[in-house]
Length: 505
Image 1 (cartoon, rainbow, N blue to C red):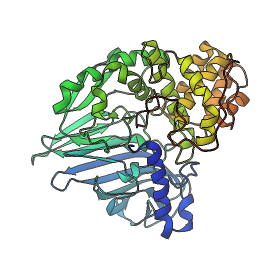
Image 2: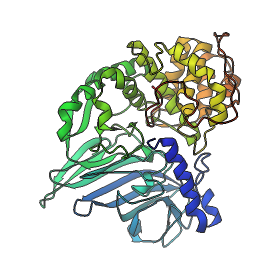
Image 3: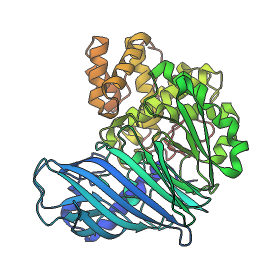
Image 4: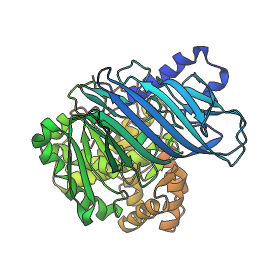
């Protein structure tokens, strides 16, 4: 069975255990205390901006990188740590002066000549090289025959560039990509500058208008063609497509404009400067263990998936598009809040499917029928994967966070009514636009907007060990959980889900 995101998370956890055999005891608590990945991220500062440069060297298939990180300290400190793994660090400077550094246990510790005072701003420059093909405990690199792409979620962006690799620390990004002609270097955001270097290489610089979490960064080099066209309200659409596959993938890519119109009707205006799709230039089934990934403004896909007819891919494409609102604009404050991303993406992806009359893999033709099917599995999923809002590293990308999260949203809508539910959704997106949010934030917004205290109701659905009664459906029943966990996630009988980070839409 192809490797899934859940397996990736498990490998990450196991890899961390293996690496920590010679690590200092404090390594497990160096980060901000994420409930799923406690060693991820670093205390003592906030990242304000990343200015990243990547140079792809085709002869060695390696990447020379420079990361300039602007950070503001939250306490007086003699050293700062960045997350880093698999990077061959050559030099580090702080505010232009050489600094001592050490690499250990997925951390790069930087010690400047003088302590950094609380509230001060520092610029850390890290020069390094990396091999996208390197065997690591986990990796964000996607190597291709003539370049690479990036898939850093959940905890592997720091294998691509040193960073404070936690979703709570969003920052501004500029990314410069240098590639030999005629290859093309692309990244998130808007193309701000193209500089031919006169030696058969070209540097392209991209700027993201809005802050971004490290796990949403996209950088790719390959034989690509850029398809640009206006979308709804003049929104720029930019697809980056393998040149040899432009014609065969065009039917799928041309679906985006109508999908955007549908999404905006439900969620409000698109939150970024552009949107597009990057079918990575590889058909290797092991290139990455998912089908789509919502890297900000430029969603990564396996190209073979997009060759299918619209009914086979439309709901999945909507799932990834919805992440522009839930996940990219409003980012989870911790990885325990992942259901906010995936539950919403599955909910709207399924709604889109059934509105268009596309039966799902189990023959259901309405959202209510699908939710009733999932409801019956609720206790089993809670037994096998924990409550919706209580994942572990090895259950983070289980169905419970996806369709289980959608079931919570369905229950909330049944409880408060469609009009109140829509107001909750838009208020939550507006209040946390381009920021981060927790599960508690969503519960608070739901209670305030609906005019009723929903804390107990949502706590039972999100954190309870038993599936609560479904409002308005007293006849719905839950099958008893068996003691032996189902390795497939106790999914409904039928065709297997796609092996991706994208739910069962």
